[in-house]
Image (cartoon, rainbow, N blue to C red; front, side):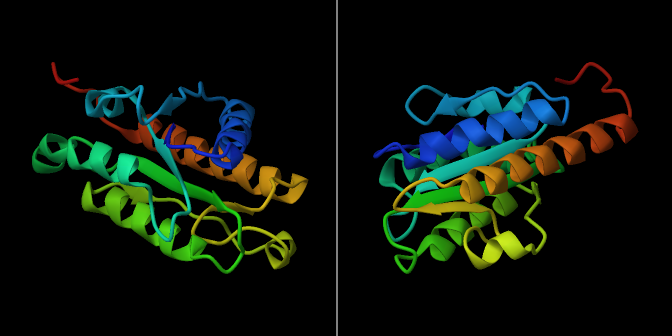
Length: 170
């Protein structure tokens, strides 16, 4: 999992995503954008990407992804499942736009986007594009984030079970 967090809301969602990863039998690896390198993505089987909603992703996360151009060019992330999450202080402050920017970054690398299926909980929180929180992180928000972690992990496990062995490649 890779994320940027400013006010703590995204970090709270990241912890819930990690719980979902563990519930699905995965091993979460959490990295803040200022602690990670693009090469770290080569070691993951799936990715959940998070950013605070600043009417889009933060500049720090955008700069981080700009440095992933070599991975884009080689296609080494193609086929890995990925999801997205965001948090901000207003439900009408552009969280969907932030999720769409995150989605664009993942798809541009050929990753397979895993969203959330519709649920009654989404009347209060969340989006089919990914997990969200507004103002504070509620239990509904945490459950959306856990579900996202489970879905990305389950998809990664299914894909890895059908992946042919690599022949000397990382």
